[in-house]
Length: 72
Ligand SMILES: [Zn+2]
Image 1 (tube, rainbow, N blue to C red):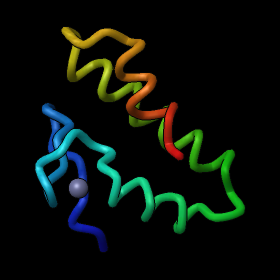
Image 2: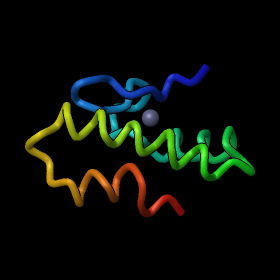
Image 3: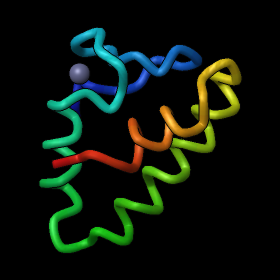
Image 4: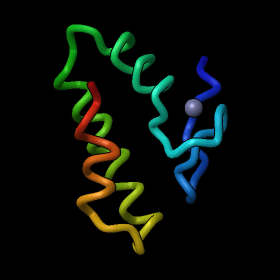
């Protein structure tokens, strides 16, 4: 069980205080979903939709990059 969970509605990491998914959680997710990139994409898309609802003042492009893009 990871400490690096999102704290809603701020979507900051409970483990390190950085914007979620933090680098540690990204590495954990990549390991957990190794060989299942589509499943990881579906999970992150669901997180993105929740974050968009919780953080209406953030630009969607920023949230998209944070949750879906630039993982490596
Ligand atoms: Zn973290």
